[in-house]
Length: 141
Image 1 (cartoon, rainbow, N blue to C red):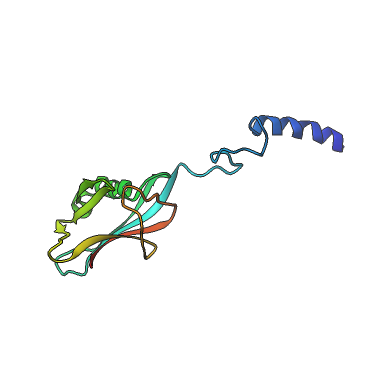
Image 2 (cartoon, rainbow, N blue to C red):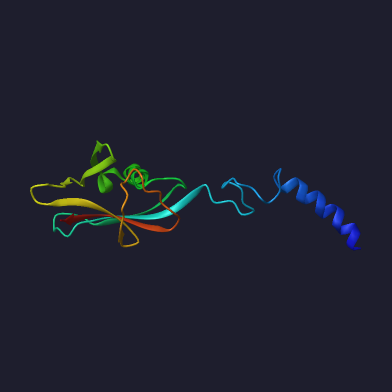
């Protein structure tokens, strides 16, 4: 009985496993592959009476950046999630959200957050993960 099961199982493994077996250097190899898209919760916020705080659930490609998520939110609802930016040598710098401008004179900027922790990377460099809570927050320095 055991031998009759071993042959079909060996054949199945040859079909399923890649050349070289389980010891692969490729991060794309997995018996349980990562999903091609991920869910993220994206919020915009400012402690100003004229600003409308808002949140949206988005489904984006798994290697998306924070900036990609912002663009996906605009594609879903431009009036609620519109923003402007300037390119710098570090990548896109967010200058306004819903028309509320960051200002050197007023010492304000748009702060990037993930799960309530300030990011140490820019919008174009930070890669998001599934079920991450992203926020862009109007802040003072």
